[in-house]
Image (tube, rainbow, N blue to C red; front, side, top):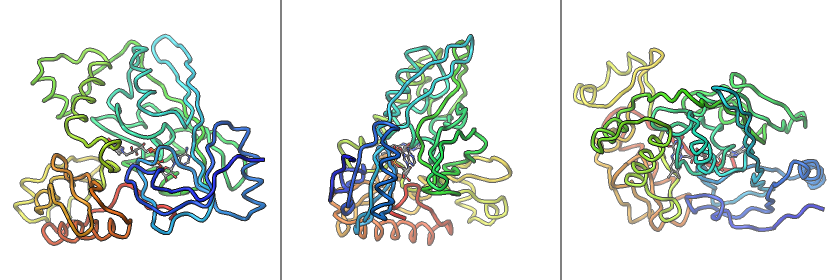
Length: 343
Ligand SMILES: Cc1cc2nc3c(=O)[nH]c(=O)nc-3n(C[C@H](O)[C@H](O)[C@H](O)COP(=O)(O)OP(=O)(O)OC[C@H]3O[C@@H](n4cnc5c(N)ncnc54)[C@H](O)[C@@H]3O)c2cc1C
């Protein structure tokens, strides 16, 4: 007999605080529950969906007529080698607690990913990145349950197809794999600071020399707490728009003023533009829309906050307003980073 709840409000399962209701919900705490869950799902002929902390999803108003599986799989194992340590983490562990533990152990590799909300499994979904680090830099492999073959499998880093805010799980085989745990390789004795503009400014201003992973963690936490709204106090799901990636030709065709001013980064013959700058250039920083109840954050316009919005339908109206105005002013079409569910 599985222990599920019925007719739960999905607002409690997203940091954006929107959405209808789920027919059923279960907390997955151990792998032994999986067989029973899939037996039941088959019997009832219902759809299912796994989430972590709900910090990168927006539920539709019509809700989810199926079983919501909330990943709470725990675990933190350390394999102690001379220079590289390997850690195995349960997908349901709160990500920032894992970063804190590794920093305490004197390990480096994920310290710049401090204070990213959500669970460990969620980090793989969009190859989370911040302040010059991405999860793919440390990932060894991911243990998954394949819901098509009903088999457990280990996928190595290459098989996860991690790229800028994308992965096998998000872009190529959505909803096929349940992420159960992952292994990371972290460095014990070889801390190296990889310069990153925002961190360079911070260290210069505070006269700090970055000498270990803890210096980076503390700096990142300080910057994030100053710049970003805390989702526990102000409903939001982080960057609402992804930085657009354009070809050299598209970049050359931009209006001269934008081309000269837009912050951009060149990689793999492509150019990543700052979506925050494009939004601000279009006059939409700290923009509050009374009609829908949504706004762009005054310190970082990439973030959409829910001030008094009630429906996802209104959020979509607000998103379209931003996308259309930015397109009119810059000829660049922004795309969303979080995902609407169910999709
Ligand atoms: C204030 C704030 C700041 C943020 N900053 C950053 C940032 O700097 N960089 C960044 O990259 N992101 C950032 N994010 C986005 C988000 O926190 C991350 O993407 C996070 O890793 C999502 O994890 P989650 O557990 O909340 O995933 P959820 O939102 O629960 O799920 C996201 C997607 O992954 C799927 N999923 C989740 N867990 C599993 C699993 N175990 N198995 C199968 N599918 C799963 C869900 O079905 C959904 O499709 C930020 C968000 C907020 C609110």
